[in-house]
Length: 107
Length: 241
Image (cartoon, rainbow over all chains, first blue to last red; front, side, top):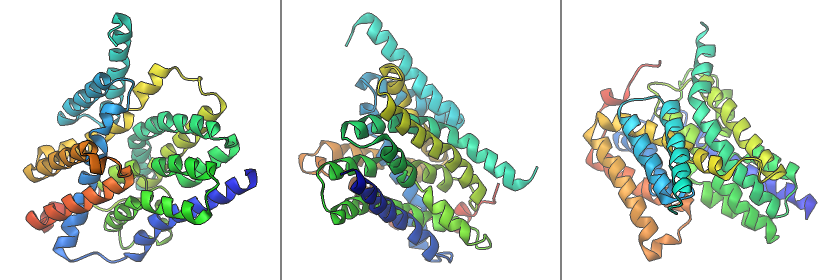
């Protein structure tokens, strides 16, 4: 199996790179069509939102700490804090809440 | 300061949460790769060459079963097809005057997170900004895999649990500020989250892989939003920072 593992890796890396590279190199011109432009403008917002929720609730050891991360990050992001600030605050919220929960043996 | 270096530095700075989040996620990947009987070096090379979470986790099962290479190709194609949408979107952020080879290099680093941060920049995307992001993301992803594979209990479980929300925190920081200034975007974000939640609850749809779910919902919701609320020219055409 050991030798073929690298062949598997080659296959997957090749497929994945082509998926990423082809649109970026084949679409060279600015798209003029308003519908297509609008569609592509909305893509990142939809994609990221779909990936955030509900996955954030199950990413941590408990749903409560996932929810705490969601609320913390949402409030700070709404106030316009930087990516790094929002992101670390979410981590700290999880770390503290899970510590508290361990302490009180709630879960 | 040289604008290229400045863009690169911005990229490094904005990429820091990506690197942290990747470290936690790939740590888990390293542990699982080891459990699947994959050599540490192979796991690290896989992370370095693929740079994709869902695809790599799925690959472990394929390799373990000794499935045909065609099956591996098909699995990766389906799970990672969302990158195709992202690259289409990014192609519109490229300065037509930018040397063409940059596109081949940027392509390597189109992950959910790098795309999210890049796509929401104002104006054209500087390749050096993208390289800055990639230069933090790739070491995070690769190093995490190595650490996970070498020693599953190097990091305490609580720290791992905390780090695993770094990526989501970053996503929220990307999505929420523009949604604050636009009712349409706020609606799009809310609708996307609600639809994603329904997808994970409804019995028939629950089994759909996460990659497919992203594709289906992105095409449906972005498609509907583009039809209902076409974007006017001036809304988009920001100047490069």
